[in-house]
Image (cartoon, rainbow, N blue to C red):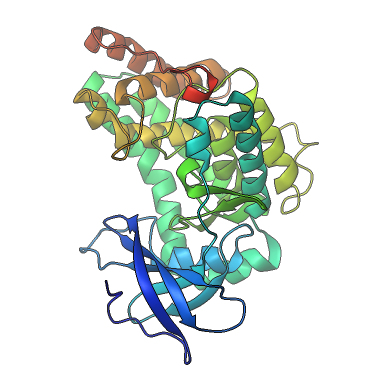
Length: 365
């Protein structure tokens, strides 16, 4: 198997090539190192980004991956890159289970411990100050504008889709309230950090040295609350979502907050921080409504091939319920829209099981 036309540093020679999967956006391979610099080890991972049709690739891509590998703690070391073929060569972290494996496994103690460790690793990965500004230069103004745009557009479009499908009366007021919250977070620049943006369980490798973060195609500079939302109501953009056990999200958010204080000091003492996190969760839920509603209406189940994932309907009902429960006082219009969505879903999907089961590791079968 060949990697194709990739320009490698002088003196580097790669041997056997083993595919590690990928997506419509990229191809990933483990490659034997026959000759290379000291420290590369016996193998490396080579990720090549594929050409995308015009207009695709929002919030993802080559530049984001490079910035994440260069600047995010806990990511593999960036060893080489080839701009012409949009290929990165990175440290091979080896064969280890992921957090998804632990959560879908059978050991509750192990799953709890690794999930809290993942949240700490995520909080410790974010970067402010000089590192954030260096990454911002790597990302460029176009991707910064793209980040600002999706923060506004995705929640608005999610509410629009929900209003059209379910006749939600509070949709317009909820969209205005969501936009106000987005504006607040965008202007709170003291808490803008570089973060991975897609820290899903299958992107978290459980190595003997700790949790390492993979697949950094969502890397960007944004408000810290968007990253914290992954720990407060996991996992915002992932398929591996079931009902966490009592106390786990409190433990994960605490671990995230303690670790992120290295980049943004004073979080533990700020009474407004939990409100910002709840607001960011609500924005992710509205954005997720855009991505998930068609699958829910078609009554599909979400998971990669060979994996166990939730039903779209149960996942959306769980997330709308979270917003109603947690945000009624702070975001009453958004919560009202989600409450209407719940009533519509229970009428329209009454023959479906709308209960999101526990993670298998915590008794979910």
